[in-house]
Image (cartoon, rainbow, N blue to C red; front, side, top):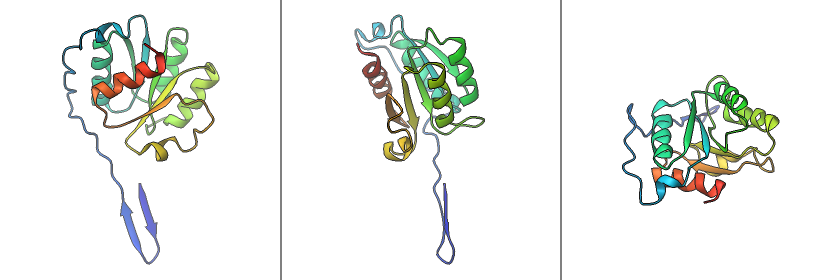
Amino acid sequence: KVYSQAGKGTTFKVLFPAAADDAPDPGPAAPGREDVGRGRTVLVVDDEKPVRDLARKALEAAGFRVLLAADGRDGVDAFVRDVDTIDLVLLDLTMPRLGGADAFRLIRQVRADARVVLTSGYTGGEATNGFEGKGLAGFLRKPFRVQDLIAAVVAQLGG
């Protein structure tokens, strides 16, 4: 973000991804953790490959089927293709082609009861501003820990 005020100066706020190019292995599943996602599908929509890879590895280790999309447009298309099998969407706020807010709106037009957990490097208040009363299932701040990701998904799906 860039903040500028005439005569006072400019401030740049830059957020960098916390993950390296290769997502770390989330490690072995804790006892019982590998069954928590059995029979459930999560669509991960994020333009950062390391974030997608980490989320995929962690969720698959917990037993979830995982679909990936590299931006909002691909995420909406993937949701439409698998609308009847996707249990939850993990959706980044800031992406090219179609941002999280617009992708959320389109996903909810396709299926009004779609569960969407928003992710962002911004604080919860900043990221979810504008989502009030629109049925957002939850928020997960990036960078997130594997256990926080699993907990957020399980909290929305029950189990």
